Length: 113
Picture (cartoon, helix red, strand yellow):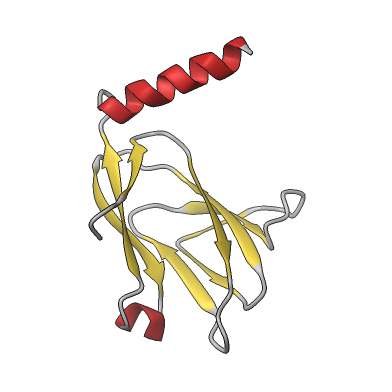
């Protein structure tokens, strides 16, 4: 948990989740938000909203989320994986953070192309 993923409040974060385990499925959970899920990672599948999404072995999902309140939030897989330390951290930064200014520069550059 020393290197959290950093996201600016209100900005869209995308996760590409893959079930690469052996026997257990992966109930992927993100704290403090409802996220949008594209089942099997296929954008033409009808998305749905969830707090936890089950990713089967060999399956994928695209998950998109935003947070409106800066802070530190967890995401992880529920079950025995969680009990064995499968926990990660998101730092949601304020809009005036250094990361926000970097993202704005990238967005402006992409728009000029």
